[in-house]
Image (cartoon, rainbow, N blue to C red; front, side, top):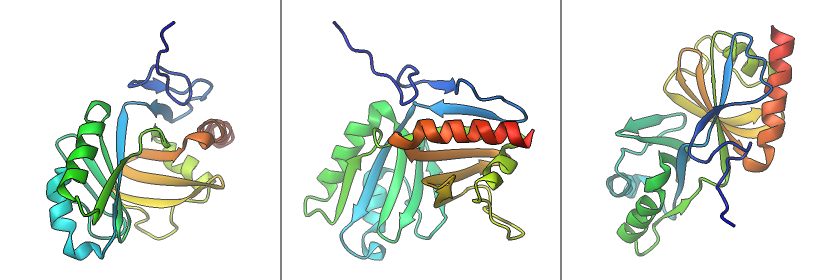
Length: 194
């Protein structure tokens, strides 16, 4: 018997799939099982090692809260003053982790594969902003969370990493164990908002 890898919600691993049961009223929700992830942690103040860590991972790591950087299939998200999340292709995750860890044999920076920990959703469409407001996340400030920025926050009472990719386009990462709850919550919110 051969086991086939599956995404958190049961789609083929490595695919982008519409979430079953999402009503699609002004928004589209897709599970992104094609995103590989690394978690980078620095053991020291990042200002002294961020340039070396950026070189090792192949992207300029964002130095401040909310910042997101992209480059040739990579996306870097600032999580804390000493940690970042880096998206890469699933195929490159192991090699990229090894490359970073080889560059820092003293463990000043440590890379760990993180793909299995988070489930990523792509939410887009004219109603997507309203759906996120239902969960209490979207800022009431005039500018809110600008496109090209990210935030770690609570949505529907669970921790999420939210990346505002563009106008009405959001990438949301939640713990794998909370993925079904989050998808069901968004579907219920879409039925209420419509």
